[in-house]
Amino acid sequence: MPNPLPPDTVAVLGGGVLGLSTAVQLLRGGADVLLVTEAAVGSGASGRSLSWLNAGGGYGEDYYRLRMAGIDRYRTLLARNPGIDWLAFDGGLYWDDDPFTVLERHNQQTRQGYEALMVERGDVQGVVPGVDPGALPHRVLVNPGEGWVSLPHLVRHLAEEFTLRGGTLIEHAGRCTVTREDDGTDGGVRARGLRTAGGEEYAADAVVVACGAGTPAVLAEAGVDLPDASDPAMLVISEPVEHGLQAVLNTPRISLRPHPGGRLAMDSTWYLDRVTRNGDGSWSVDPDVPAELAAEASRVLAGHPEVVPQGWLPGLKPVPGDGEPVLGELAAMPGCWTAFTHSGATLGLIAGELVASEILLGRRHPLLEPFRAERFGFGWDS
Image 1 (cartoon, rainbow, N blue to C red):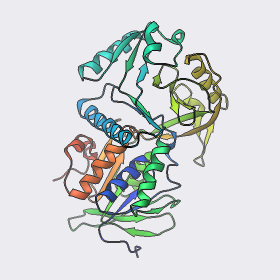
Image 2: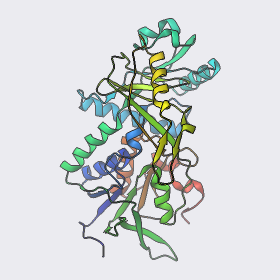
Image 3: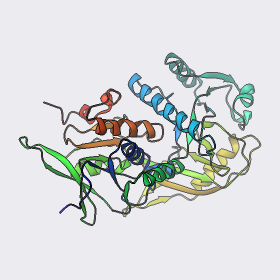
Image 4: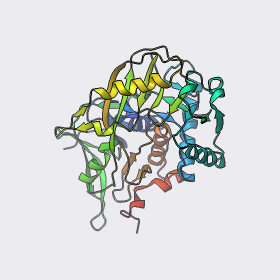
């Protein structure tokens, strides 16, 4: 028998930024919320994301609009919490080995009204402090409106509000499944709650699956096959260092941003063949990789400070099969919403807000229409 919960409870599976953001928005709207996590809150992809807040990657209009709404919510959060050190909008700097790639990125951004500046190498220090001009090509792209967030800090911020608002949290529940019941149609089912790895069942009026790269597997067990392109990633955090950097850097060999406590957060893609998943689900990392990445950070920073890796976090990066977010209620399983996206940082607040809005108001939100799972050709309404 399912454990008793208040009527109209929403069960949220996933303790990362998307799950907590949705859960907090539901609590703000007056719902009773049960949040269940496989391990500890924030222990998944949210703990190993560079978390660059941007909308300048050549996205289609629908995705661009959603990302801009996501950035707007972070600006509101910062305005309400002006003293925090884990969220900032100090701009972004981008360059590529191919100057035409940079120019086309600039042109595409300006066509969408995205703030983008082509800056000569000698002028960069006055626009983006902390970067060594000698490491730059002749011209670089600067996006003054971009920012970054430390998702572990944001997750803790949201978890505190979740607790204060009376949410119910179950951590270390193991691999959970969505339970279903007949919806009264010919062979149709709807979500009715969650079952933990230990067999505990919790009935709910609605279920949200927001468990990062584990989302497709959870939905597959419930009969919904969601295309999945999740792949390895690794974030490296440095020891405290006087670096002078404020903006987010994206270069051919490193992506780099400030991190709370005077640290740096770093990642890239060139080393991913040296990050492997073991048969037991653990990860192995070539021990030379963090040092090589730190050396690249030192090379591009003004004054070439000694950057020393303090820790690194390998794991799967959540990516839907076509690269676009999957957000909203599943037509193939009514009563179940999902939040599955590579853009967990930029969309972290807005996705939770919109998914919660659909549940609370009982109607589909137009901003989510292009991102529903129905686009993959299953679960279409008849």
